[in-house]
Length: 343
Image 1: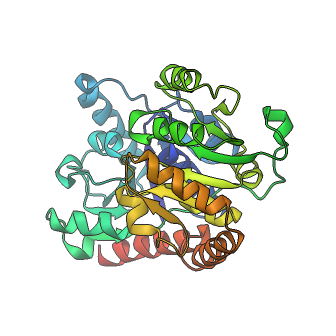
Image 2: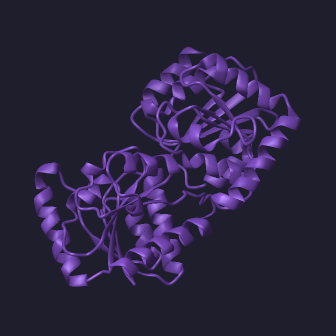
Image 3: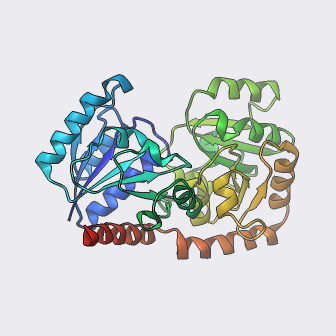
């Protein structure tokens, strides 16, 4: 079996990480793969260094999509893969129909019509799969593959290295600095809790605005903007609580990262967390954009050791049973085999 994996995004978000980590894991597992990737992406060099066969395809503007589609079609005919998997819409837009089965990877609640070349679809939550079917995808062509944590089990970072007192209560967010991530709500909640520090790991267009908000609330010394980090596991294990305050979140891989690391989770009720987290069992859920509720949930977890232990224990068991890399790879390989057997 030879699979062509196509990802043309240049971003450094969770979808791009999931793509690269999945491809590397399948490579280690012996799957024959060829990757088409944007050379401007941080993931490009990472895959090359891992020994994966990677070919450059630049993602130009929409007006040049026909040229990119012609280029991709030529590569498909030359390389003759058995399957093509498109990671996100940009890839699906430039993969032509060549007679090879094409899988579209859904990281959100998108319209299947925007994946015109795809014959099969993968969603990262059961809810997304249900959405696809409701939008006209045949049930036997829509599959669920879990996301997973790739945060390595390293020692925690030293709080002093990040300007944080050892005795402080540390909250961690891992996300792009974007309005949909609700980081402004997290900063407002933390400002109300004396001695509580917030680490914001990620970059994005909202950084200056969020820094101004922290300064206006007088908590510059308690809110640390860490930028893009590659030590997510070390950060997680140094934190007392993981926050996912998103206004919009189709899934939220940080849920799984917190569960793997044994860190309690508080999340807002965006689609992904609401579907995945069992409130009061493996995390706490609060309404979106509700500073009072978020503050209350943070105080509740930090102040109740028995609650923290219960949340972490249940989450760890769910992670091991449902959300590991091994579970994801088994599901994905089964999908590949099923598609080829039916071809």
